[in-house]
Image (cartoon, rainbow, N blue to C red):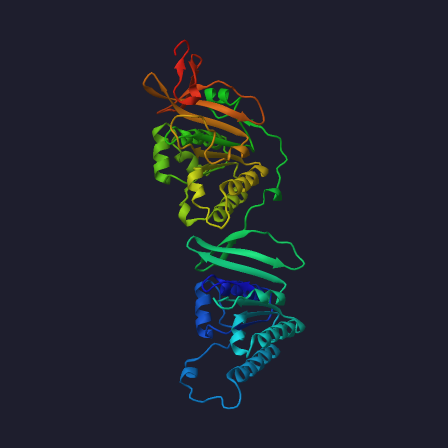
Length: 455
């Protein structure tokens, strides 16, 4: 059973089901109670399905029924039409001997039955009849305000629910008798020429990369010193700090180091356009065109409001698997969080699944996280995702005798030692510079440090 409100995409799943049968050389049958056969064929064609030769039993209402003046003087309409419907289905099944049958929607039979009991009997006997004939049936159901359709689940071995909100379409498997399935709500998109695309949620435990963590240089000597030699291949690094402090540029430094070693890097921008990013990178001494042209770097700006986290995760997974990508940057947890459309979604849960999935494949992941406050009490992350990072680097503004400066430090490194000092940080036209330690300042993490000996 594929259930959902009108316009969610139930019928299109039926298209896919029959098309797969046709590709396997199986006989198929489409039984439609609502959409006329001619319209069904045309609509299927726009989605990439050629059903011109598919047997279609058209039981949809006709305009002639509205003008028909004959009345049912002896039998109720449901009795006459119900018997006619049963005969039509039986004849079609006997003629075409299908291995796959779509009934769209089965719930329409309710209106051809005198009461709910008779409807349940008719639906159950139809399913039994098709099973006895060796056919696998997929039926759709559309609940209305007055009548729910969960009572139909007893008829089926599997049940799928499709929902549609302002944020998009989502699919959830309710049951699949005798088989395991991926639980949760998964994003779904309808594309012209491609039908339905489902984006299953990632399961980090599906894959595991067993290679030992290798320290990779950032190609900036002072940054390597701060990070204890660099970052480890297959690790997750969080770079946090307020807006404009240099998080993205620092992350680009790490990506550039991988690309310079002829390793594929993918940079996903949630808070900046691709052109702006490339222009800004060139202005600080990081012209990225050579890496893009060589295929060692891919940059893509993501519009959060048009792409769910499931779709984004699928996009990243495809990039990594098809291009053997070794480095992934997710630039902006705030923009990423805007993609959380599905009910019950949580930033930590979604980002955890994606980052751990990539790490299990040996991919190095860098995430930038914006801290809302410019100064004040120190926080590693406002998004509460610091727990999933192997490395945490922070950059923050500080006031030194009326001058706004920047300080950088490393809070955590899971796979090795690191420098525990706070160093000055700046970005010039030749990139990132990590300066001398602030050895004469106290209270740097408060944002308003004092010199030794001052009160």
